[in-house]
Image 1 (cartoon, rainbow, N blue to C red):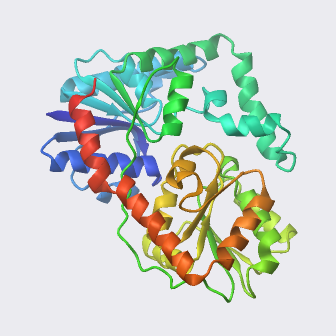
Image 2 (cartoon, one colour):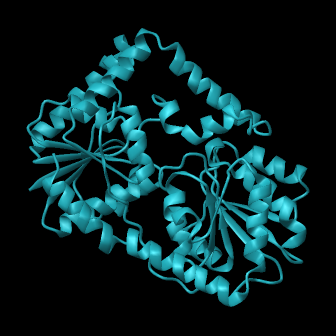
Image 3 (spheres, rainbow, N blue to C red):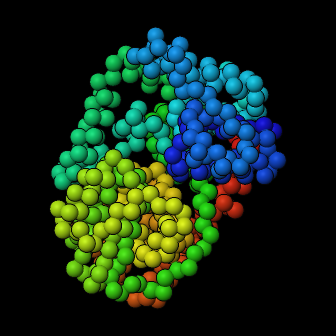
Length: 407
């Protein structure tokens, strides 16, 4: 069998890209002739990681697209034509799309191959109401008064959706028609499955959790009583909600030992604003912004931290949670979305409302006050539960069966 994995691009290193590559390698190991097709690639970042997998780049833009500059549907249709030419040459038996616009492009193609979509989430730009369900509820309830930039961004997206217009309708129509032509959809969580159903008129998806590399790392012997070491790792963007982590940490500070510290790992458009907030809250000597860290330094930092605290809005899965569990950190996550599934509603950590710094502060204090033996038991329970649900030995065989049989 020949399979093509069609993805938006391999540029920065992200969870979707890492999973697409893991799936490709697994299929190759099973004897499948696997090819990667993408619209963009950073060869310096991804070249060595491809490990000999055949890679084909289809240019996202071409000078002949210029007359259609204002009509995104027309540009997408032309892009679909370029993808179709590549697939005609490869003649695959099955094509698996990952991040948008790959699913809509795939659905628009005239190919005899089976068409599948591994859905990380529907495109948020097209479906803001369906993909920001908890955030929208919090906004309507007046719970976001302290986060004006987040409110403005949500209103902007909702306003664009409400205004519609002919170009918007054509773009939305291209996505709806393309997804309708797909043979089967797998969702990375039950939360994403609901988003798919809501965005695509009741379309059903099978839940296939992503594969997460979870080699066990040394666990801490209890809690650092000189001061709780807390970590958050993410892109620093509005929806990732690091602001609440900063505010909650500040509220708990006096109850977390003599020298607690918050470690912020990642970068993004909100970094300057978050650094300014940390200064405003008087956390200059208690917060470290690490930026992105190489794998060895990230592993060392994880092993040095007691708690992983991350409260994103409407996160479809959250690979960092099982990764944190494998490193031996106690887990604090939001009360909804993929992280809620990973934490089993609080069975393997604390699930708190993402709008509430007070709730986060209480969770951090509760973690710090755990007896060492109880903390260690909770860590191992979380780690073992993640191994049982998300390890490659569990998830990849299910993925292979789905690719072989779906559609």
